[in-house]
Amino acid sequence: MSSRTPTEYVEKATDSSASEADRKEAIHALKTANECDELAALVRNHDIEAQFREEALEAMGTPQCDDTLQLLVGEEVLDADMQSRAVKILDSMQQ
Image (cartoon, rainbow, N blue to C red; front, top):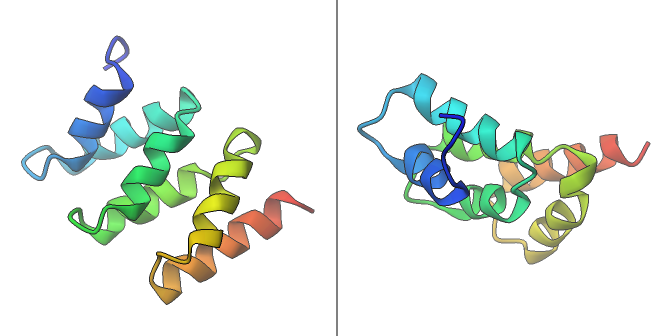
């Protein structure tokens, strides 16, 4: 999957017919490429399974995604559990 575009990774991550491993690999590839906006879009996407939204949220726990994660938390569009996890990720990065 190394030569794919960010759009292709997002498509793979949201493809319910793809294997769990392939979907997680796509999310990891977005993290590696510092594609914070795409990861945030996955987190906001209520059409995909919660486990992949959570995986994308965890992937945002990098210094490169700090600003995007702050925006995501500020939007208050996440359910209570994910909002709490996002705040914890932010707090751990700021220590």
